[in-house]
Amino acid sequence: MPDPVNPTGPTPASAAAAVERVIAWYSREIDRERRAVAPDEKRLEHLKVALRASAADQRKLEDADAQEADRIAVHYAALHEELMES
Image (cartoon, rainbow, N blue to C red; front, top):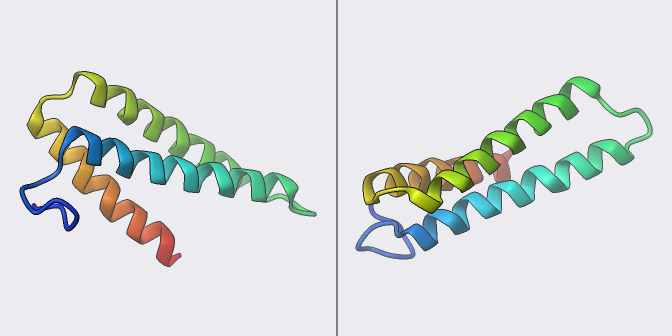
């Protein structure tokens, strides 16, 4: 699936950027939840698990072949859109 920013397809750099955007979103939400008057512990745990999974995928990119980088880029671009709409 072509990357809208890079019509030739995702690159390792665009995959890394997509993952970084999602990691930043989770980090902000974790901070926001921790600062809440009554933090939702279930949501906080969900966010932490998702952040750890994103960090693991970010590490996978270091050794990913083009197909794996493409899969990660597409997944995280879609996830970022979904998170921004929520």
